[in-house]
Image 1 (cartoon, rainbow, N blue to C red):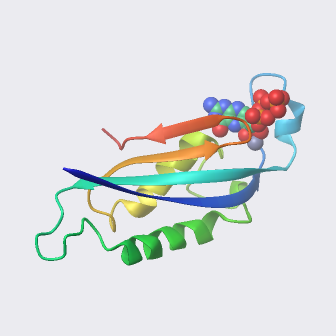
Image 2: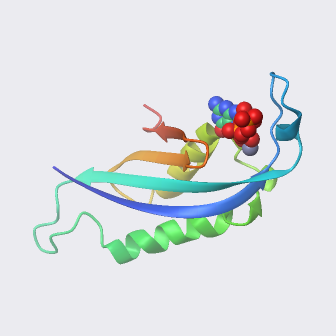
Amino acid sequence: MHELSKQFRFEAAHTLQRRIDAEPSRRIHGHSYRAEVVLRGVPDAGSGMLIDLGHFAQCIGEVREALDHRFLDDITDLGPATLENLSSWIWRRLAGACPGLVRVSVYRDSEGDTCSYFGPG
Ligand SMILES: Nc1nc2c(c(=O)[nH]1)N=C([C@H](O)[C@H](O)COP(=O)(O)OP(=O)(O)OP(=O)(O)O)CN2
Ligand SMILES: [Zn+2]
């Protein structure tokens, strides 16, 4: 069993309604995000690959384009733009094209925050 992963960064803005008193989060603000997509499987005997990294990069690039420098509140099927929803949203966008998907993690390094999604179970 091998594990292959790729990371990408994106900058995006959002608002967030919170139960705790956090007025700043209700205002439009931005974050720097880092995402990690992890695949596991047995490499193809002929190619020696789980997936060609060029294809992997192309799939991830399409997801990044949908997130980078965007206002995340405008993404209709995302829900509140939390780390939790971002990680599962990225999963849903990649699951069909990336066989062996096992984890999507989204990081906000400046805050030391991370959320990982392992699939619908
Ligand atoms: N479970 C989650 N909780 C929160 C998330 C999240 O994605 N998942 N996100 C936010 C907001 O994005 C908030 O803007 C995060 O910024 P941060 O500064 O880390 O949060 P705080 O305002 O609580 O911290 P400060 O020290 O006041 O900046 C919030 N919660
Ligand atoms: Zn925020």
